[in-house]
Image (cartoon, rainbow, N blue to C red):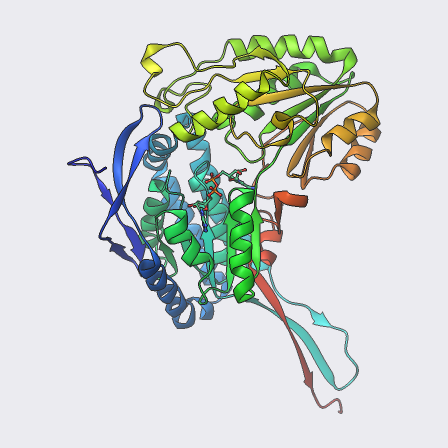
Length: 485
Ligand code: NAD
């Protein structure tokens, strides 16, 4: 349904705004009210965007020296920083996240362009050992056209996380933002254009997964596919990429554990366990959604967490509460469905319902919830709920804690809380996850820290220097040369 007078947001192809025969409506999750009509791109726009990216790649981008691409990436970062408040307001309006968290997202997005706008200048090939009369070396080259399909939870951060290394490495890109939160992606691409990115280097095709995402993933004109989203859709896009034999980076879901030992600093642990499941209402791939706590500190830690959860301020993102709404009515109902199921699988210690404040009735809110005494094999302990729901398990022996931590098909992040550095290190080596935090938990970490999944949490690595390798490939060259004086 389109509401009269609502702002219309187009796509962006070859530096030009693109309008489509129909639009889809985006709502403010804090109120449930429509806020924008967005171009509903499909196969036609995807074809045009891939063509634009191809000609920008062949025409200019691949030929630019790394130093020049680096400068443009840093100019994009400046553009992001200059529009900091505008982008954060848009992100909060579109995703419902507290404005303080949205401002951090904008800063992190700028950091990606600064980081890759610097490190790309240090990515070059090797000279290889070769017999006399031969010169052997590697060239590091971009893939070409890189497709980026992203989710709605951290649109700006994830767009920047995947686009910055791809662009810095010399690829041109087509971005498909999620239909629930496409606004910051389009605005960001306009800013990048204003910052000097040549037309066609970054194209945006908002739309539904089946209509814009699927044709993009299956497009024979793409050379690389980066997907961030659910495991189910990740499987589908991987199959689509297989048909064209295109490399895929997959950043999927998680069920990340905190392991808390008796000697842990419980003040810090309680604070970060709380934050890691309430940030953006738990809609975070590396949310700490499982707590595995030693018998000796179980009661004390749960009491602290229960007090903290009970005091949480829930409200519209723009008022900068502790916890904002979930992205949609569908997501709220999905989370409430898990909470209902969880009543038979554990004991509710906090939350377990929607807020009673009538002022919040229009939005998609769920109170942060703790389930204690959950069997590690229970549904709520196994499935990614993607909401503010923490499952608690107890342990007596370290081996038991490790077994519970690894008892999932996911493997994104883990937190280890102990002052025993030997124990911490032993666990780091045995946890089946892509990132371990010891005595801290910074979901996904800083831009420098490689990030990605073990097992069904994904394939490949984003962030850090590793992402530059993810978006480039090496070519080996061997030259027969005269070796005489
Ligand atoms: P989703 O998989 O439903 O959608 C992700 C994107 O895929 C959207 O843009 C969507 O339109 C598109 N899509 C849907 N169907 C498609 C299809 N058939 N072909 C191509 N594209 C299609 O995920 P979501 O609900 O937007 O996001 C939540 C999920 O994302 C969670 O599982 C979360 O853990 C994961 N996530 C992972 C990371 C990470 O870095 N590992 C980061 C953020 C979110």
